[in-house]
Length: 84
Image (cartoon, rainbow, N blue to C red):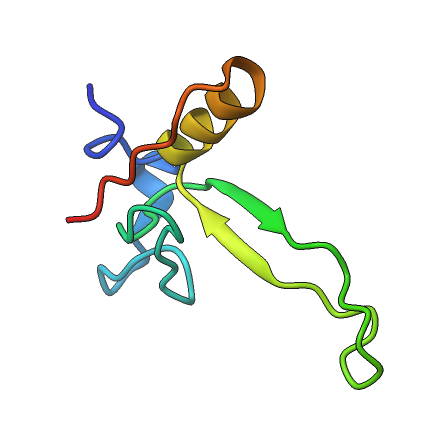
């Protein structure tokens, strides 16, 4: 079963009206695919500017792209974006 067809929440992924389990629709920051299962979050370092001091950026990452990021970190394997 491929990651794209597998749903982490199984039968509970759809509520009674057949919509997505997530209340908000998130897309992977790297590949731009909609997240149908839990993925990863990537946070930026805190801002240093006076107006935005302490604020961070949050990026949603799908499970496949997370594996690519980990390969880059540990193996220095280049990340190839798979934008549809």
